[in-house]
Image 1 (cartoon, rainbow, N blue to C red):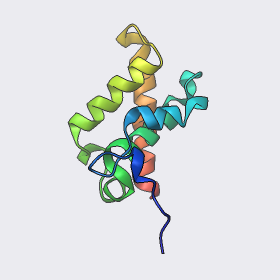
Image 2 (image 1 turned 90 degrees about the vertical axis):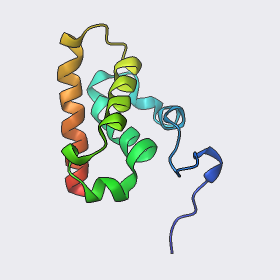
Image 3 (image 1 turned 30 degrees about the vertical axis):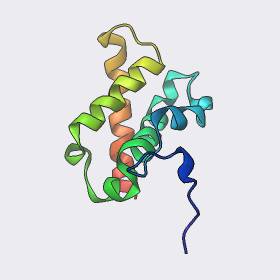
Length: 103
């Protein structure tokens, strides 16, 4: 009744390591305008899963997991200062919030 899941790349909680999610979405790495899409994929596949995202609003999601997502996005797109990064992170938060509402 469901799709088979390859558990070889999943951690003990059933989520994929961020490095695996990033590797399979390398087309999103070259353009900062795609950071929101990558943030949603990281949140969904590495930290929360569809069930948790579906059951919560953005503000109810675990703050530490969101912090890790933010740090990874900042590192991937090589932001060197908050002035450049914060508008992009705001777009990421909007994308994750829409994903919460869409599921």
